[in-house]
Amino acid sequence: VIKIAIVGFGTVGESVARILTNDPREQLSLSMIFNRNVQRKKVDWISSDVVWTEDFEVVLESDVDVIVELVGGMHPAADWLEAGLAAGKAVVTANKQVIAEHGSELITRSVDVGRPLLFEAAVAGGIPIVRGLNAGLAGDSIIHILGLLNGTCNYILTRMAVAKIAFETALKEAQQKGFAEADPTADVDGGDAGAKLSILTAIGLGCPVSVGDIPMDSIRPVEYVDFSYADRLGSTIRQVARAKVVEDKKDAVCASVGPMLVPQDSELARTQGSENIVVVTGNRGGRTAFSGHGAGGDPTAVAVVSDLMEIAMVGQVRTAWPTERAQGNVQVDYDAKHYLRFVVVDAPGILAKIAAVLSRYEINVDSILQEPGWSKSELPFVVTLEHCNTSSVRAALSEINGLGFHAKKPLWLPILDRGES
Ligand SMILES: NC(=O)c1ccc[n+]([C@@H]2O[C@H](COP(=O)([O-])OP(=O)(O)OC[C@H]3O[C@@H](n4cnc5c(N)ncnc54)[C@H](OP(=O)(O)O)[C@@H]3O)[C@@H](O)[C@H]2O)c1
Image 1: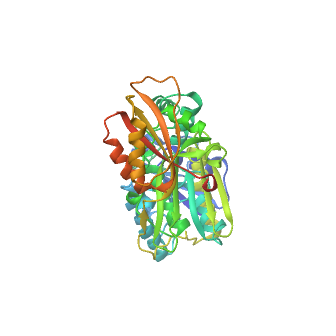
Image 2: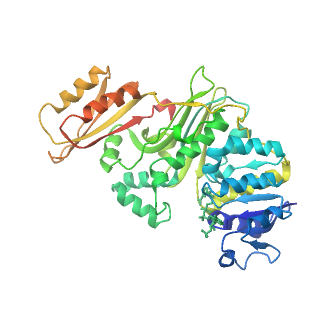
Image 3: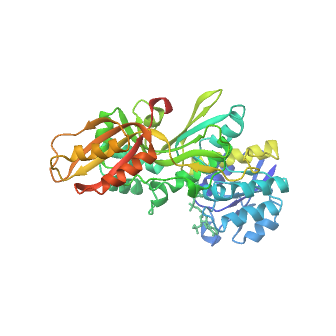
């Protein structure tokens, strides 16, 4: 039997305590709960044997075997994980921020002290993707990871498509229903998915990268009209996190987070509402998809309790984090088809001017789409591009941005190939 301290009795902490109380496992015993101002956190359904404390030193000095860190944020959580290992405790955490930034040091520390550090809940909540990469697909050599890792973005984008509403309206709805934080920055601008992607890149592709090196684009500029153009292209829009090994380079990956057009018949498009999906491609095994609830107290608590069960049954388990490898490089330039949406003050010759800049960068236009019935003073139309490098599109767009006919900043979305999704 292992004795457990829950550190942080919030949404996930409470759900973990409920599983351990209502659905007890003979190997797991909840013995301590830590939170600031703990008095107001006490609930009557927890056994009277459990010690409540607001002093972290009491946790460290106790006889608990495992510290379950569920306070979130970088500080003091990172120090508490380190202190827990130093005190000879096993550690389980749901903290993507800390693992994305300090995974290498913490796993090294965990190996040095001979105590496990597990973090299944830090990526895609209840979906067992860390264990899937670490154990289930360990026999393969993974080359590509593609995911919808942020339920808030998926909820907002699917609501925009289905209810034909603006980003702000969908965001408010997500906040009212508890799918989005009051401050949605980390979700909609890509930081949350970026942290999860950097963890998957380390354990899946064997290349640890800094979250700050992953290019991230916000979903904020996506408008309803983009879904109607995407529909004409047989696609929809999702916030996609992806990482791919760069051929012949062990220390580099191509990675990004941001809105993309994805084919309507793909697994990514079929992932609706707040659900998550991760599609992993291996050299030998091909594609494997993991999908389900990427957040929420109960699904996330399931991942935490699964880590606890593994520690109870196996003992010193180790996540395959490449601690011996220096931080890899993120290549930001990649080849794709592209979607460019312009909103212009209509005048003769606009298309010719855009085409002239694109041809100077040797970019081929694939199609031009324009829905009828829009005002001439804010006329949206779309140009799709054949396969070309993102660096060429970036350079061409910065020239096109300088032309005087825009009513809004153009929107640029990469298009995911059918074979990739
Ligand atoms: N919620 C999800 O769906 C979900 C999904 C996947 C991963 N996660 C991760 O799980 C972790 C916990 O998330 P959560 O949603 O459960 O958060 P939460 O509801 O905000 O709970 C955090 C708890 O920790 C306590 N706490 C925070 N800072 C503290 C400090 N400095 N000292 C003492 N206690 C402190 C809070 O106390 P107060 O009540 O005083 O604030 C609260 O009870 C985070 O790392 C999060 O990223 C969450």
